[in-house]
Structures are given as C-alpha cells and as structure tokens.
Image (cartoon, rainbow, N blue to C red):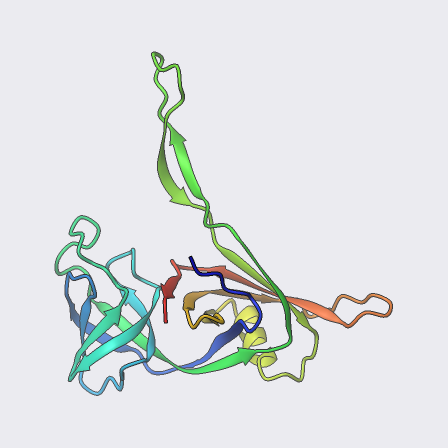
Length: 216
C-alpha cells in the first residue's frame, strides 16, 4: 500500500500547441503506434492530443513513448479490442502540446463525476434487481485559487474559457504520477470577497474525453 499526501500537487494548462500532423495509419496494439506525416516534429516525452476515427481515443491526451522516424508509440493507448477499434478505421491527426503553463496559488482541488451509470434489467421473475453498466457521468474538476489576474496562467485560462476552446490539463502528483485530460475551461472573473480573508476565485474544467493516468 502507498499513501500519497496532496501537498506538492502541481497543475498546468496546455497554453500552446504545434501544428496538426496527419495519422496515416495506426496499429491495434497494447500501445498503439501511429504513423505520422513526415516533418511531424514529435519527440519522446511529448504529450499529444489525438483526433481519430476511433471514438474511444479521439480527444484524448497520450504521452509519446517511442519515435522511429514517422512511427510514434502512444503510451497507454490500448487499441487491442477490434470491436472497439476496427482495423484501419483509426486514422486522423495529432497535435503536440508545446507549452504547459503552471497554475499557481491553488488553495484546493475538488473533483466530481466519472461515476458509472447503470440500466435496470430486472425481469418480472427476479426477486433481486439487476443492472448492467452503461455510461459514466461527466468528469469535472474545480480549482480554488487565490485571485491574481497578473499571474501567467490567467490569460490562457481566460482565452480557453471565453472562446469555449478545448485545452489540456495536467496534474503532477507528489509521488511522480501524472494525469492528463483534454476539456473545456471556465473562469470566475469576479473573486469571492470576505472580510479579513484573501480574495479567491474558481477555475472549472470539464473533461471532453477520458483522462489518461501515468504512474511516472
């Protein structure tokens, strides 16, 4: 068992992306290998946003584990199941995240959603109700921050929020693990004001695709 304290958790917004590069082919594998157009510029360790004909990975963020000329291995991108990932149907594009801007002065982080939903399949003869899994509820994250519009993250968060733009979020936890997700942002521009208390505001994030978690 390992217990990790929250103290030291770092958050960041993807504040700049490179140009999109076409995926001309992608494999069915435990770690999918995407063949990109020449001149893609992707290197090992990059985080990339995937757009794909496979709905279950489109919009997700993955880390690049290996690059062999134009063949790029997407760490944690398991496409083995041919029912979910029909062979040859996954082409699309990627864009690499070129800049992460740290979100500082975080007072607290709250998460909600991601709960499994179920459909009732109880029949008339059953004496105990039955259910099967369907979809999960939307995943949302709220960051309470000490308000300061002069901080470096304020402008990119405001740009994403005002333009209803998708931008990635990254967490680095004290044990070295990481979580990345792409989604929509909101920003509380009017701070909360209480006597003898610091000004605070809230940043909202709603995941547009399944987050990806890395142990290191």
